[in-house]
Length: 216
Ligand code: DX5
Ligand code: ZN
Image (cartoon, rainbow, N blue to C red; front, side, top):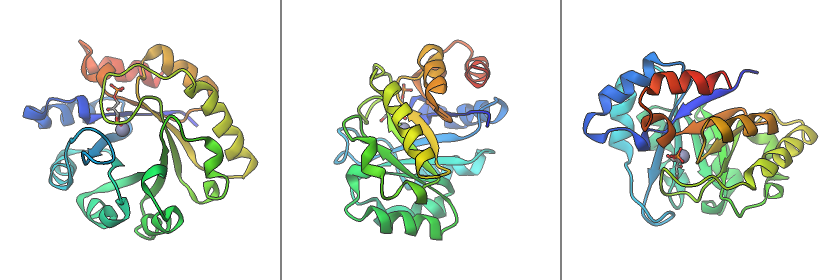
């Protein structure tokens, strides 16, 4: 499979979101990555349901919603109605991960589980077969523009091994500190989806940067 690229709108211009949405629409990007933060699960607050709804109005590509919130199961329906095509919940935020995943799947959208940097891949032994996607945080969640955590390369390999061993069809998505250099190494290690925020929106030519991320 050719890998996917999902620009993170956390680094977009919030005073002119439509302009950045249209840039992503005309680029080679595959998904919009939308970071929802509640100020409790992570030490930052970003945006919620109304902004996801507003982005959905103009976005011509699937919305990959990354929920950095406590008890995400309570809001799965609302984000589905807002237009999510992928819902990523954190392993660390779900007391009943299995039922949360069943709930997401019952809505007909892709179900993903995200692991914080300290959470081992082996935590997913009993559930990986049910997942459409596993996302590894390669920075601590909460902010864009942080330094890539090197251990993620080996962790990606371990996740790939778990996915093959369990005959799971889950895609491997990586979030944080992705650029041409880390992106290439992550793809070699088995990543399928690269999220990139500051590297795309901080570039002189974001469309060209996305095109280059697509051809790594
Ligand atoms: C961090 C978010 C990321 C963030 C990545 O909590 O989940 O999606 O936007 O930003 P960069 O690509 O700048 O590390
Ligand atoms: Zn994210």
